[in-house]
Image 1 (cartoon, one colour):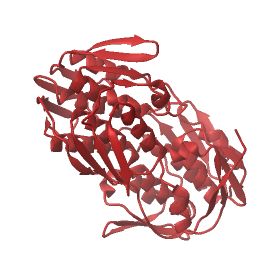
Image 2: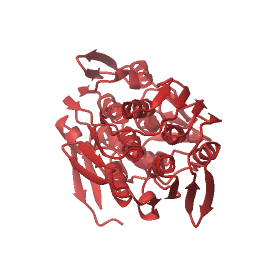
Image 3: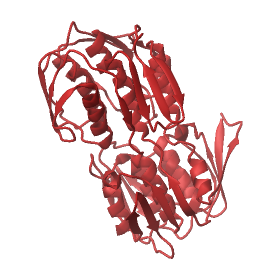
Image 4: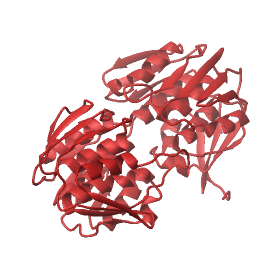
Length: 421
């Protein structure tokens, strides 16, 4: 098991390239199950979640090669429709195979999903949508068993906008007989990119990028090739790394519109931003960090996946800020760990009241989930002394060797083995 050792308060400098989006790739990969043949996905991040999905697709019979950030997925010989617990328990996104298998093969047996150890995140929206499309759903021994001769178009309205349920439902509807109308669909960039991929395969989707989708089912889809979008959460995390260390850095990132809500908040906090030729430059030199309130909401609002990182940033702001998470109400396991570094944070229901302190101090802390891990790295960069961050396997699920990017920017951070269990 590895840990990070961070020696903080150093300035960062330089420019780094943002990796492909993990959350986008985890939708594109199972979408290939809707076809028979060879699909290509470029700009794929080398993160643990990618490898978990590769193992799952291979379990189903797909032939996969992964080199130089390119995935080649041949689905010609898919013949197993069971997604076992040993793979699915590691990652909630594994449930994405449900819709494609059901739509293409008429049967799917998928273990109930796992992933980060926080919060109740039920998949009832996925199952209700499959039933509306004509599937029979049973829960047997911890597995979802879904059957259908052929799915039929239906009207589906999500009571809550859900990225996962939207993605699964779209993938099921593209091969359903007739027309489906999906309302209150998620419009996150990762979902929009999935819609483009399906359209390249031959799917008929009206309303791409909007919350109302009209999908005319087709009989067959063809393999396709697509370049994955860059990771907006990694982009945001590294921009905050520049801000919290009061540095001037740049990121190569081609979709600033995907993180507009974060960029506006960074400017509110006192940072100066400039966008030139695909590079976003943040200048926080000699800046006094202004306390800036944040409330998470669905896209295009402030992302819940940036909540923990923003709290870390606000620990060094002048004054008091309130960070509220309206997406996942109990996603605050990073708060006790940040307090070990000297942060002054009080929890009130789903809000963190953050009183800025003059200095954080290094200590040994423990990662509890993916984004919490990122917040501890950011705090460690700004803390006086040495910070040890344990259980960084959480971080490796979604960030491609983030320590190497930070090292390139001049951070004093190393990965070391530990006997901690």
